[in-house]
Length: 289
Length: 258
Image (tube, rainbow over all chains, first blue to last red; front, top):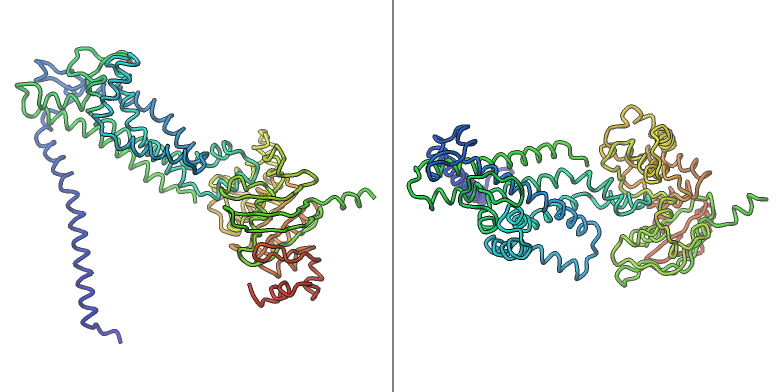
């Protein structure tokens, strides 16, 4: 009754084969990640030190550290967040909780998708035209961060909207049927149960913004400046642009320096991604329904 | 004498109610009065329009895209369609859903939510309301030591009693139960039924049920809904003692379909 037929044997072989193919493809993913990290650590690990992190470049950018660029990136990302997060969350709340499904909402959704698809260099040119020239902010942290904010807005909106929509509709209906307004329902039921998901999305956005180069190189980030930024109207150096500069634009840079800069940059991104993953795990642990 | 006049003002009057979803009729030609302090049972198979009927009463149609309600519904004499303060209307009507909805907040917060929405802030006052509502929903003894654990993690039967406690915290004049026993074990169902018999003295209750016998046990009068219309309304006693005027009602009650 339970003897294997030739057909069973063949099915098992095919099943095993497919499992193997899928496993191989998955393992392929690890190779580039490990190679990049390995190469960076091997070639650039030597230059890493507290001095490298906390001093400026010296000797015509052929020596010294990355501090102005590091600080500049923190400035750029923070200001971009301050701008994009409130706008993005508000827009997502409107789209998820208030908007009816009509032509107007569909146009907005289409706009968001298209905004997400605009190449970053196009955002850069828009930033130059709008913020640097038209609004007269000049090349400054403000102009660069506004450009970054507009570029990352769709990410914030989409991730926030997904977190909001993960809250079951039955919770909203129960709350509405008690006489709560839409806003009371959002504040007391929807937001408390999606805030962790929203934050996860924001952190992921941070790590993406950190590495962006094109949107900031015409709008606020500079090749080199001996001054640290004092306000959002100053120009600044930035990690991503600094990497480009030391890797291709300056003669006589020792080989390990660009790798060191890249290692610090990828380190920043990895740290933020880890925070985001930790958040997610924490979230799963206290799933409330 | 005063009591007699009070009994004559219907809690709910429905005239020529028609409900459609995106132009497709779901319920039509409903005319009925629901008396104060009665349990009004509504029985009928799926797609009869029972849930739509409840949604029309507390104006939840505005949250349902495509749902259109025509006809007159008056709640203690107020026309619900033209009522300005729909939030006050909804808060005067407690709703219990088919699947228990324990909101993902603590048990205490679940029951304190409606009072808080009404603007009650004093924790002493909230404590009293929470205890009283949980007690009346026959849940207090099981949860009194863990009021700060999550309401959404209670068992199905407990969550359904929590939902009832939450509805009671609204101090409703009307309680609408939509097939409340669908996800609840028989013992809990009986406990909730006992609770409803008590509550009847203080409020009007509409009991939509898929269990014919439940309507028989609880309802003073029963309406039979079928395929988007109200087939008949009668005293529950007479309905179950062979007094149904419509053959379809008799067939349904006796379990020949549905």
